[in-house]
Length: 369
Image 1: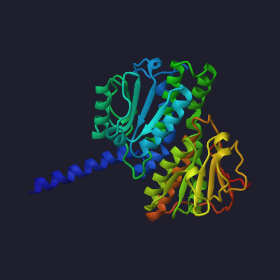
Image 2: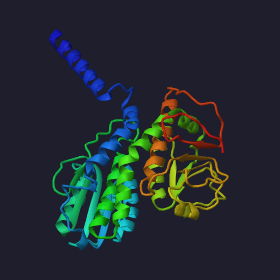
Image 3: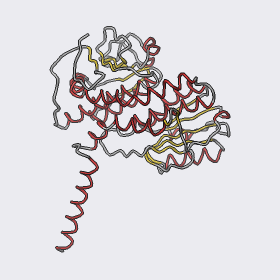
Image 4: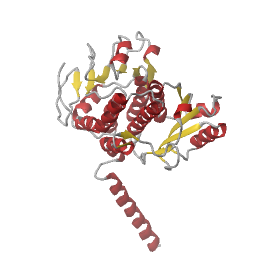
């Protein structure tokens, strides 16, 4: 009996040591996953950009023969799939459709040799993933998997990221970046994307981690913003890719506050009855179509005017990648709300400004507009 007790204690101690090693000095997995995003983004960009070119060495597909693309995902992966469908259709001039994995498995989409199915998932072992992959394979469709963890086999992209935290934050930005680079890659192979755009996209992706680091450096400012956001009956909205990121952000805030937060396309919102709205706009074109709602907050790059709205602005990059920065902002907002809900208060700024600008460098400053 004594031996068994000693054995149990020893295993528990080993588990604690292993957990401490994985946390690498952070207080929780959630904190580590959010504040490691700059490094994750840097590693992801460098993994798929080599010698000034986007390279997916495991992808062996002739994209010139593709006539339609389905991009699948569940949960936060569906938000990534929806954004990827928008971006892929624009950059590749091929019709692209976003479906949940469940919807794909239960519906009757057109599948043949000219179809490409991209499946975004946590692992390549999930039942829904396996069913979708089998269905696409048996129909003769081309397939690419984009997984947080999976095998690096032909037409499989594995990021090598494990999620352990309380918020869906570990892999989303890296998947979004990878899907965006894949869209540029396919667009290049189909001769739709110009060399100039490809060069701009590569440079933007390689420098993106600096902008994510600037967001993390503004933690105290963002904590103040988090206190001002009322999540009761909150709707997060946007058009096109901004609606896709609103789905992800609504999931973050739902998990953080433990109350439902909703995402709707801007054209589905009745401004007379919806009084608590956060709007996202990642480029000038999408900002123009956003109705004149009475907003709780507007989140946008610094090169777009917020008008009369209370806003958060961040240093812009390529419009293709701007949503990654705004999602990083909301990861910090969700983290702040989660910590405070659990009674772990963060240091707060005492300024009360209607306009918050996230500094480009790790300088904690607040500007009034």
